[in-house]
Length: 255
Image (tube, rainbow, N blue to C red; front, side, top):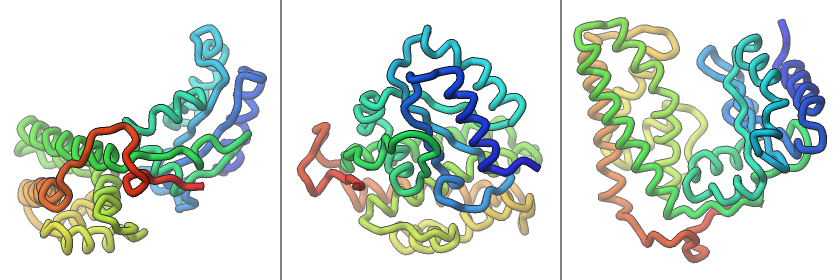
């Protein structure tokens, strides 16, 4: 079986052959970038910085991206210029902060380590993404009500996003989120009153497909816990100023 490092080495080789000097860097982020063991729900998340992202300069990369997605069954890499990535910190605060906390440079320089992340806008993005997830979960329930297989799939598919947002909720509360999911749930319960057991049940469904009670009840508890955690953000941490770059106390930078 091809290892992760072998797959990445082949990807970089193909990218370099296709892009030449236009390719500046390739980084691995997400669970694999943090050095965590990949599970069946984990992808290899790759970000590439380019000197130019004009269509004419991206076109030579198309065969490599198709090979990566179709043959290797991985998520498509994302492509930025370094300046575009830096300017995106206000709208992709969660993603860039996650990259900073755990990534590996596979080729070239490190494009993310020194990007300042405005934490007031991070807090807004966390709330936006939490509320969007709540709405999606309600929508999916209405379409899949009474269909256990579909409800189970919704929980499993949504869980990674929920766990990421719960970790970032703790960051907004001024905490360093624990590594273990169950510890994250315990801290969220302590800070917001959300049911840690509801999140643990969703984790069990994602990892093993198992549940100990009626699935619609599990789904309801999961949604209610997420609603409670979301509501707590406005209660505990009301929205601050909307400036792009707040004072030093509101800007997070890793160097």
